[in-house]
Length: 417
Image (tube, rainbow, N blue to C red):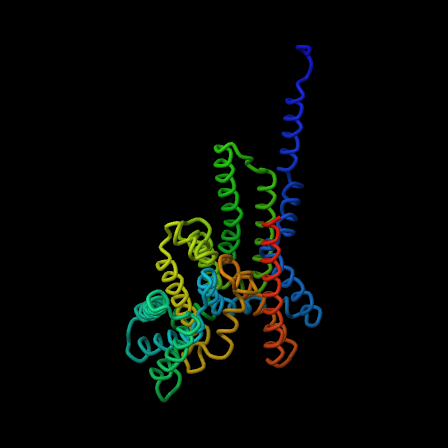
């Protein structure tokens, strides 16, 4: 072979490099996204599409639905049950369930009312006491599950009844406790809104965090001699996310603004998302939910993971009940009853958390509760009965479970292929 003749191996390597660079561009990112969908990894796509459809339908039937102030009220309502749903995500990720979150939320609101209003405790101490009781209840469920082998369905169903009885007992014959309307807690739940400049500044943070995390991942992959991915694709995603959030904040500020209570909910979602995706504990949660025995053999403290899931679920339920009391300015026998359990569990599942365990996201609670509250708000504006809300929510939940089952089957078959 001539010394100046091109090496066929080098030509093949050059073509491979060209294809690699092409795949790292925006078109490659789109193809990778389509490949994930075909493999059954739908992510947040179904709930995002459903939310767009719900918004278009209700706004066509009543333009007030998308009015800024109506959306602000919707966000206030999302925060209370959304926090409870965030706890449900924790137990669903390990393949278990907690049926007592509604009762726990009502009992926590009653505790705050009793300790703060009736007994004169400082409101902060009353709130901490309610959260501590939530942690104790979660620990009890974990003990029954880990040590005695009681199914979580049965343990939490018993807890639902017992905690409801405690709620009725401490409220006494009056049946309700009114919270001081001018108190900071009630103002937080009803009227406190972020300044416009602060809400716009906070809307910049997710895009910045996305770029920082993306650059860190690219550097680690480059150090491991792996394809680092596309810088252009990362910048495009960050810009699109930032513009979308800034547009939402701008629109909400045309009305009353962004509620602080919803901001607290979003902050909790971000913290839990970091815990699920960036910590050893979060990876252990997914491993235990996917295969308990394999996780145990891998050295994971399975009992601790279950305990943490139940404790977090009960504590989030207690916090949701406290926020609900702040929203309503009262603690009553009706708190935590009705459709609170349904909406909290349905929000997590509709948002994309699997009932089979091993897969879920903190964003499931956020997106799922927005879908549920959007349905409730739209039907209220149309003057339709609550019976339709139950039927529509049940139908959406059934569709979400069907999609999850089909996606799971698709992932299994794709893995075998």
